[in-house]
Image (cartoon, one colour):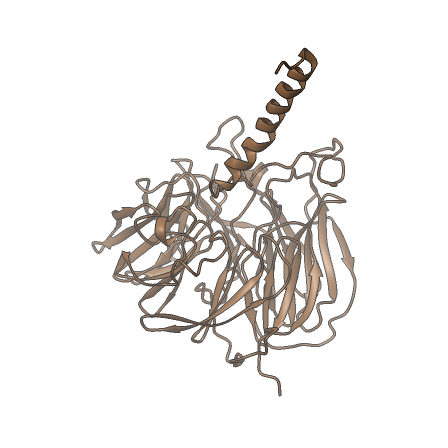
Length: 489
């Protein structure tokens, strides 16, 4: 049978079109492709406002809106990243409920936020969270009632940020007197936590950046992920560039001490963790380029005690955790896995040795959230590139980060391994990417899944949770939700 020339062209171009459209589909369904979705969205193609050129001059914290008085003071505190003891464990004495009906813990209130993964801090009946308003291009520190979710005030300033897989990522730090936040571009605000009155600001990009050098860049590629620390009235920050770490007096904004940075370590997405090692209080930080310990004691605060460049993954988000025998566990993202560091002290000086490293397929790992230690067990949700254990909840003995003690099993995987988890008593609350909540009972040799619930129709539920009093606060990329998990009278 003969086919005329016109039909030949039609068949030819039809075949080409079929190949063009089917090839991406075959490729997509053949694997996970993580982190392929972490990409810049094209302006004008996603219903987002058109970005107009604007001056880069930023007046941090210049604008303020006073909105409502506090309606009711309710108990509970989660004053910073990982809670009061930096362990991501709720230490409030208010008991948590044991069971709920099929709908799960009741939703007390829900707020719509700008896109991001910033978690809340809670203190004196108030919830504090960073929120980037894309419509007016403003970084906002917002204050809400823990009881009702009504907004009390917001302190904000205009700053241009190009969307890079979300905006805000950090958790503020709050005490009775001070509230400190770090915005997406390393802008620091210190305000009165009750009134929102501005006390001082700091532009770490301008103050500590070294122009024209990669190592002098302050803000990481995916914006600031470091959560601020307030220690005895001093804001402790790790800018990188011209200073490895600094201490700022919260009352005056005066720099009290500065740790030199001769190796030009850079700001990572992890946070500073206070630890006591060999009886010495220190700030431990996993920067881009190395891990360091800096004195946190009055007689030599800010002095570099030890540093290693042997563990230096390209990206790290999880913060260091203290194990046993003066060992520290550190973690890298995207397959870098983890390492065990041993800190020694000879009576006059400290030293550090990297005694073990392992890839994500070989031992305890975390792409995003810092593991939790209960007793002698370290709990983590394994990343997508962890082989057979990928996306499972796994625990290890702190003495052996390679051999799992317990795993949730291949039938029980949790999103992409990026969701948060938090502990209260013998209960762990774990979220997957889609805001499904799993509640485990923790035991000495593993965990038992007690219940699971669909909390909301969410996406990218990656922000850290907070558990304060009767309330568990969680968020997805656009919503902050308060769940009542206490026992009703």
